[in-house]
Image (cartoon, rainbow, N blue to C red; front, side, top):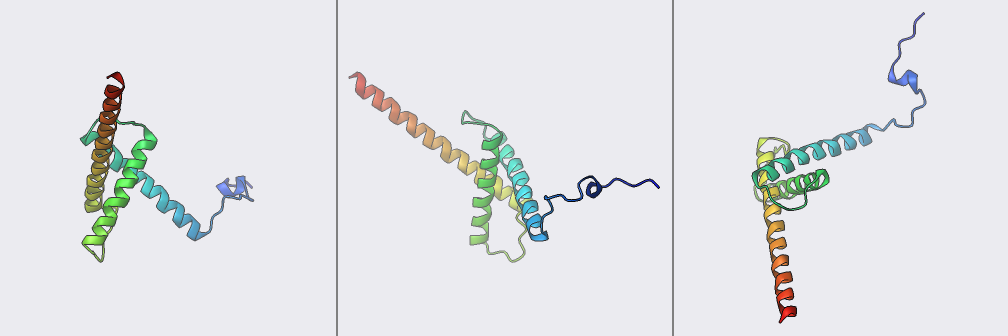
Length: 124
């Protein structure tokens, strides 16, 4: 008799089995990371610049934009049946991520201006 191999026959005492609640939480976190990555990539493509880039920065930008944008939508619009991971949620998340980018660029420009003024003051 040939035994069929399944993931459970390879490691029958696997310690990676999660409870249904934990598995649901992991799925939600991975979904938000994927959604945030796409939002961050779209925001960076709409407003390219010289700020620090990279995979982690894009994910943080997208997830931050998603959290801020969707919080503001739920705060002001009070929609009963609102799916945050949908077209409207995506649009709002990209707008919020773009806002984060613009605030970050403004802060960088302000910092450079202060550094220049400080250097100019030392030269005199």
